[in-house]
Length: 362
Figure 1 (cartoon, helix red, strand yellow):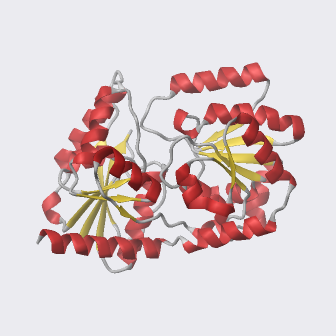
Figure 2 (tube, one colour):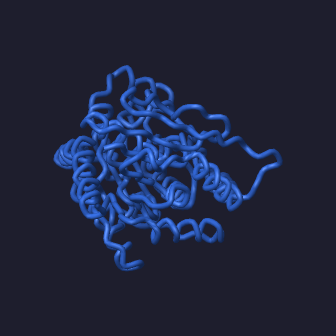
Figure 3 (cartoon, one colour):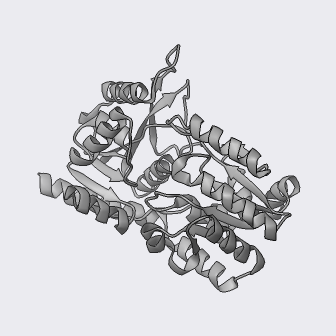
């Protein structure tokens, strides 16, 4: 099959990580795969090299002089990607987000999680990207249940894979690079934004420091299409009020990320909305103790491999327990869980799903 996977960005967001890993696994299984995306701000490639077996099609998307609103940027993104995309080349067109689903028209759509937007253009984009695709994939049963209950849409559930070897087999040198710089730290990956529960984690960190004063809070990642400057300012102002100085790394180079995750004393994942939790699964692969928000989807995905918390006091208590107790059974359960989620399996299940759709639509 000729397969197009379509995304909206070249940056290291979870959906983009998913798109590239799935594309490479599909190509390794013998499929003819292209990845389409927008090259924002002059980007001519993805945040990491992509295997030569995958064709990369990046549509130029320069910044607009004078700036634009989020809504205007979303509409321009849809227009630019839609104008460049060539659907007749492909047997399967698979969109990975609401922008790409609006841009390419008739397609398969992976709904990674359900969002609730207040920006009118985004809300309309989100709705169309759910109701117009001919078929749907979700990365967890919890999101598939939301899709069924809210829209009457039935989705195929195919969990994410994880690059287990990258995170499980880091070297002492890779880990020491970070501990020499940061000391003992709790890590979160995803930047500072509402959906990542950043303010809640900040409040929890203050309480944690009362028990573990030598522990730093480190925040990595943060590339996003959306404008979270107001939330970021609130977060920064609150950090000053609380008298704490978390280490904000921003995006971390692809080759440095596994060492950063593996060297962490604990990994915090306080997201208020997720579809799977790929960054948290990478932490389990690295053997890093994991504390996540008590959400149905995260209970489904992580089960006994994680500690669960809800609210600042609960997060502080669970992080303190994770730092104090080397729970080897939980750590081994986490590694086993992560190792079971392979991109090869995800690709095989996608191929079977694509073939079933082609039979049904022929």
